[in-house]
Length: 270
Image (cartoon, rainbow, N blue to C red; front, side, top):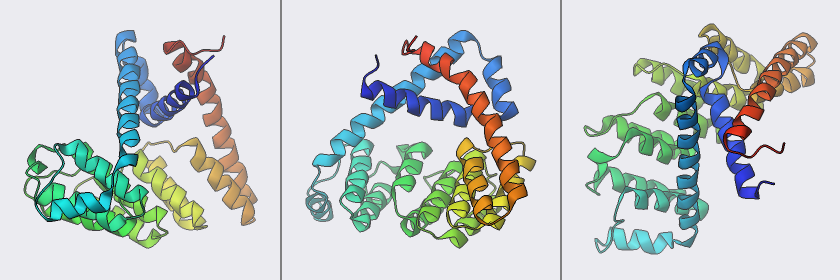
């Protein structure tokens, strides 16, 4: 029997695996890896989830107003980059997006840590901020001489804009992403399609899906399920049927992968 925590970890690892190795290219990449490389991938994924759980657990004990007052007065600052991440998370949890942005800006401009912060950490912060704040912070990152952004940086902002029902801004960010020399990846398209679908905009969702498929990328199962439901609600039975068939294909592929993932961690119920 698995504990609830183990079940949560397995579920998240499955999602990570599906995201990383979906589509023909992803399948070929996975098959080309040795047994040791595959096992190493799983171990790395599990380790990253454990680290995230530790950070989230710590964030619930922070008085963000007192922390910001101390930082503003110059009497206190986090002892490392992880401290800033915890402050941003805590501020968002306390419904203080203004302080979350302040902490992120302080890390960038005043902490002295900015040159050593990896791009992935900046992306984590972007995912935590509200839509308009994430866009503002990305602009600050792009203007900085010490920071590098990547495709995931733009994807993070696209995701947050979509969550805030700022669909026009999300698609504008897609254009900015390309102009900046970063090609959309599968995560970018999945976010756009889901956000457009949730907004009831089947036209833009379909356009993004077509671009995604033309680039040789496959969307998540949830994308096809959402599009099938949306098309059905709009009376487009042909599209609803087409998306349902595709979701069935992905579901069958997932079922083949799940036993292997569970066996790798000794969590199979067999």
